[in-house]
Amino acid sequence: MSFSRWYNRNLNRIWTFVEDRTGMKKWALRPQPEFTFKPSYWTGAFVATAFLYQVVSGALLLLYYEPSVNPTLTACGQAVGTLSVSPAAWCSTFYIINSVPMGSLLLSSHLYGAYAMIFLMLVHFYRGYYMGAYKKPREFSWMVGTLLMLATLGMGFTGYLLPYTALSYGATDVGIVLAVRTPYLGNLIAPFLLGNGTPQSLLSRMFTAHVLLIPVALGALLYAHIALFESHGIAPPASSDPSQRRRFTEKEDKKHVPFMPHIFFYMTKWALLYIGILIGIAALWPWNLPTYYGNTAAVQPVIIPDWYFLWLFKMLDFVNGTTPIPAPDAMAIGVVILLFVLFLPFLDRSPRTHPRDRPLFIFIGTSLLEFFMLLSVWGEMEPSIQIQLFTYTNGLVPIIWRLGPIFVLNALAIGLFHRRYMRSYRQRLERRTPSYPGVYGPTAVTSENPSAGRGRPAAAAPSMGSVGAPGVGYGK
Ligand code: HEM
Image (cartoon, rainbow, N blue to C red; front, top):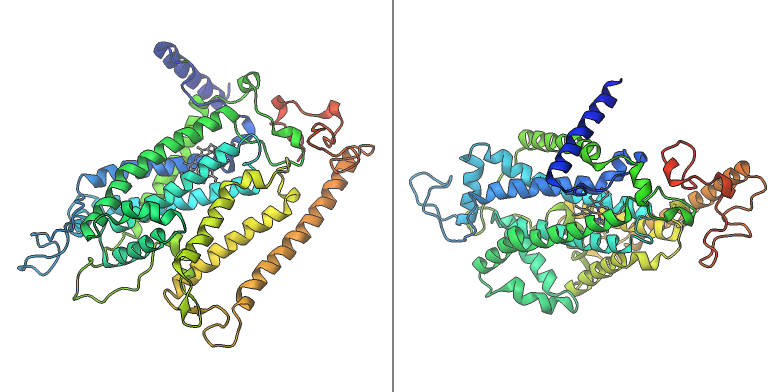
């Protein structure tokens, strides 16, 4: 018997023993088909791992952090012999970095862990977008996911102020101004965000939101997200064949790999790798604490947010003559993008999930990605430098020539790929079944006739149990 078979059999025995003794037969997550054992199918689980690391490291940081703007009476790294006037929030962060054993590692890994969680979430989002994972029956999973994205960005925003540096205070201030000028919503959230207008009330609100309100909301949303995932099962590979979008049944689940212990250990391996890399990066490049807010002796920094909000800040640098883009307009663009993402499952209604079948939505998604990347790099390289809407800084090149060609090239590239893919897909179908009319032929799939045009004769259609077999499955 091979080692892996022996290993799996014994793990199964141990898990069965635990389930029998606890009387809880189904408390592990559902089994998954074998073909999902690739990292691309577990992008959401990576985000969940990153979230768990943030919860644990954040709880440890809470033991030392003090959410107060009152001046501290300890020297706190300032000139020895004089009383420090640095705020307690900044001072306690200084203390974590310099005096708590491994505190610098803990704080740096919490900060980089936040970046990693946001980055992994974007990967998870775009993977779902390109693979059409939001389509029936997973519309609610997608919508709850969009709320999770908001909550995760909210965690980043509220956490930014906590070290109470001049930089973080300035960026939070701009963020708050933007938030309260959001059309319609701004008036609703303003009282919560502004409090009585003092720095202490701002810090207290950001702190409460960061350690209590948003994590609880995020936890509840994550529970709903995973419960929905449990009920639908994993989305099959993207396909041109709508009939392949059905759910896995209980019976089919039995043929699949159980969550406990196989998937659990598979994920543990990735989780340990993630934590190892994160701690390695934090050890090699520890975060340096900038000066505190209110230090009049220090040079005032250029106000710049964390990388995931750079695009929004850069939009405020666009000016028309001498008038900057009004904040509500910039926020309105953000709200339109958010509404587009939230209701995407109801906008892209075709039952086909393969990117080759969805050129318009692939174009929109790719253009949005380019828009975010372009404005973020621009924001990082030229923070707070104004851009004339119709003329660039040298007054010669219309701005449209800067942004426009990227989207035109994008449309051309996607159009060409679409044509090429459709041609090769049709050829493949014809080679497989010469007499078969094909998905786009006379018996094309319609909502009235969903089983038509399966791309292969009925007899050759694979059962869900054969999904792992190479060369068959899901009408790829
Ligand atoms: C805090 C952020 C998030 C966490 C922790 C999370 C977690 C998860 C997990 C654990 C799964 C199960 C499958 C997998 O591991 O990939 C999943 C699936 C899914 N998520 Fe997320 N997610 C998050 C954000 C999002 C966002 C922003 C979206 C899209 C707007 C989204 C849409 C989906 C969809 C459609 C599925 C089903 C995919 C499939 O069946 O292959 N999620 N998510």
